Amino acid sequence: MMIRAAACLLACCLAACGAQEPRAGGFSTSVEAAPPAAPPRLGLALGGGAARGFAHVGVIKVLQSHGIEPDLVVGTSAGCMAGALYSAGYSGFDLQQMSFDLDRAAVADWSVFGNSLIKGDALHAFVDQAVKQVPMEKLKRRFACVAVKLRNGDAVLLDRGDVGDVVRASTAVPEVFAPMVIGGEPYVDGGLRAPVPIRQARAMGADLVIAVDVSSPPGALPDGRVATLKQTIAIMSMGLREYEAREADVMITPDLTGIGSTDFDDRMRAILAGERAAQAALPQIREKLAARGVVIGG
Image (cartoon, rainbow, N blue to C red; front, side, top):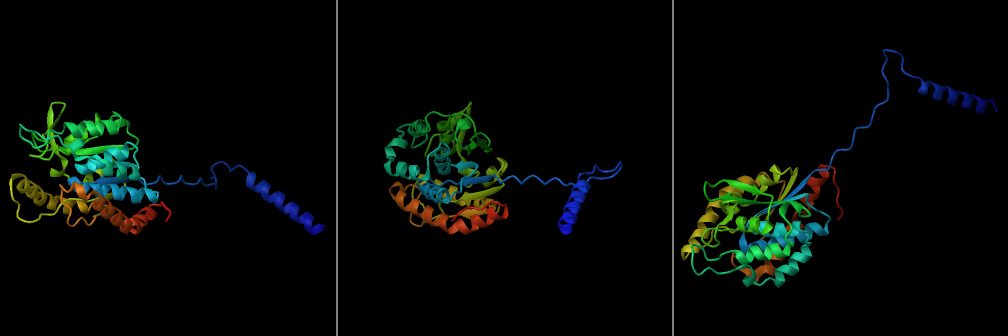
């Protein structure tokens, strides 16, 4: 009994001591817990590559299946097209089905007259219908595209307005698509200045950037005007890609050997290549996220 009474007395004394106010001029010993660190903002940078851009669908499928959802998406050219639909709320599997169902005639309206092979009106209409006329700033995921001002060559990040306009501007490969005029300013393919828009994703606030490069390396000696132009653009883009690649936390480069920028019939192969490359990159992605306190499932 005496031991229990002494224990009770000691407990009361300790409680009383802990409840005492600090003396004048003294310091409180209580320490407030630091607020938890905000999770890193994850950016997905989707590069240009025309038909090779179907690989983006495979990458998005794998990322989604492992619970990796970016806070923002930035696209160039073909990456702008894939990014727009993804940011509008379509899943990777939705995009795959859309890819299978896509008729080239639905996005390619050939130009009989003018300075381009394709007018681009069909692509514009396809995108606007797919996103249900929702403007860029009201998409379900923050999204932007890179396009280049034809007047002075400035790379511009377009993140507001009509989605069809923006996709048309970013995909306007010279000699293939007619330039897209927005606000009186003609724009051409964003890949001329940002083949993989990693720096643009950083500018939008991404702390971690997963980049996807689906560009075509220079190939055999080109034959014809358009082929020569494509080869020239590929050569110009090589240095830009190598420079920007250093800014990515994770670079995914699908093996698209044998798939050209106009090989739309090889879309399934491109999607599978994207899936394989994304699967191979998962350990690195998990490592980068874990270093920032984010753990994802297997």
